[in-house]
Structure formats: C-alpha cells, structure tokens
Amino acid sequence: MKVFVTGATGFVGHHVAKALAAEGADLHLLVRKTSNLKNLEGIPGDTVVGDLSRPESFAPALKGCDAVMHVAADYRLWIRDPDTMYRANVDGTRDLLRLAREAKIPRVVYTSSVATMHFRTDGIVINEDTPVTLADMVGHYKRSKFLAEQQAIAAAEDGQRVIILNPTTPVGPNDAKPTPTGRIFVDFLNRKFPAYVDTGLNLVDVAEVARTHVIALTKGKSGRRYILGGENLTLKQILDKMSAITGIPSPTTKIPFTVAATYAFFEELITGRIRGKEPRATLEEVRMGRKKMFASSARAQQELGFRIVPVYPAMRAAIDWFRTNGYAPQGSA
View 1 (cartoon, rainbow, N blue to C red):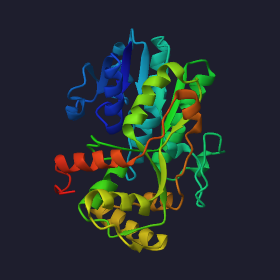
View 2 (cartoon, rainbow, N blue to C red; view 1 turned 30 degrees about the vertical axis):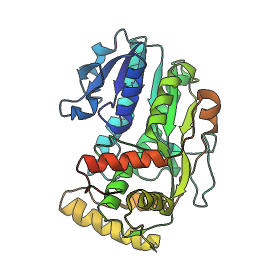
View 3 (cartoon, helix red, strand yellow; view 1 turned 90 degrees about the vertical axis):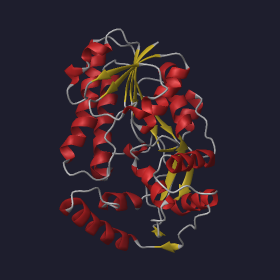
C-alpha cells in the first residue's frame, strides 16, 4: 500500500509513520525545507519536499497513492499571527482533501483532535455525539481544528471516503518540539512546576493512537469521528504519577484560576509580546483548564479495535526520552 503521510516529522506523525512502515507500507512523507528530519530516522520511505500552504508543491507526489494519512497540524497555544495557524490547519486540510479527490485516492484518514469536542467544567465524560458548536471552542488552536474537521466532514458528506480520528492527549517518546503536553513533562522534570490548577486531561499512549491509525484505513467508517483516549486524570494525578516515576516531589499548592490567569496575562505580555518568545503560560491554556477534558473511547473500541491501555508506561517512556535527549537532567529513578 502506497501512503502519503503529512506530519511525520512531528510527534504523533512520527509514530503513525513508524506503525505504517511496520505493516510494510510504501511511505511518501511530506516535509518542509525547514523540517528537522531527526524523527524520520529509521523509518523507510521517500521524502517529498513541500508545504501545505502551497499545495501545488506536492500535488504530483499524490499520484498513484492508495491512501492519505493527514496528521500534520500547527499545534500551539500561543501564536503571534493566528492567520498562519488557520492557513495550515484549515486551508491546508481543505486543499489536501481536494488534491486527494483529484488524484482519485480512495481513502483519507484525517487526524483531528479531541479539542474539537465540547467539554464541561463539571468533569462529565463526553463522547463523539456530545453537541458542540464553533462557539464552544476556546482559542485559535481549537477553533482552527474545529473548522478543519468541518472540512473533513463536508468532504465525506460529498462522497469522499474520509475517516476522522480524535486523539486526546498523546504521551510517549519522540515529542521533539515538544508539544504543549510535552512541556508539562519538561517543566516538571526541570522542577518548574511549583503549583497546579484544578483541571483534568485524558492521557493516551501515542503508540496505541498510531496503531489505530493503521486500522482506521480499512475499518473506519467514512465521515465518522473516533475519540482515541486512555485514562481520565486530574492534573494533580498526572503530576503524582510523574513524581512516582522520577522521585521529584509533586506540587502540593493548588492555585485559583484567577491567579493563573493573572500570571498568564503578564507572561503573554512580557515574554510573548515584548520579548518575542513563547510564554510558559497563556490565557488560552487557563481558559481551557477550566474544563476537564474527560472523554470516552467506546466507539473506537467497538468499531476499530482500539485498546485503552495504562498510560504509566508511556509516561515513563516520555520521561526517559526527554532526559536522554537533553530536555531535562538525567535522574536515578
């Protein structure tokens, strides 16, 4: 099977490409001129230099492909120019779907995000059928992913075979950027996590997310959304698990959201706007944190054979990788 993959230099995309290669797929991996190719080491395949913002740059490489695996996304919770995020996530998805239709590629798997779901402050577990609108989206990342997902749903409604996967919060090795989730790990390992807020996430092993991407190519139903999640955990529970793995003390101080918002405001102003660097905390993160992102993966379990596995080994693997690759000091635990 010849598969065109976007995002393979990123965290989830690396694991998806690795899982496809293990199944013997003939991979064509879209990379930008500026991409760091370290995450492609050991993954057999041809690289295609191009950019989602310029679809003509990679259109010829789609010819003869049996499937498209669209994993690439601009995943940041702070951005100086939000238009670039919408061009990558929304316009890039729309153009790639159009090119796949023109190339008569029979199937597309689109990696969306659980961020497109409607979460609640009371921690009620949601699923793919929980009502949601654009107005429920907090911040540019969530809005851009929601709009991109609508492009995928519309394409499926028009007859294109598009399967939509919604990973929750993947964890594991090779989070090179790192993602906002990875930064939680890195900050904790560097003892820069003195307090926490009352929020919650669903953590999932990135390897299981990748395995299910491969299965979705043949078992996924077109136009269907599938949440790929693991364990629903409060932030405090996550930090306690990291403490158990590393021996680093877990923070005991819980701060109100008003305090977190004040800190984030000045981080965005001073670090972001004045110094031109990415702030350690953002108002978008604080607003998102008011809702516990607890989700059910029952549909993916029933229809795709998705497995909910303990997240502890993936957390340990992530910590080992961050330490080995210089993101944090080596530890004895």
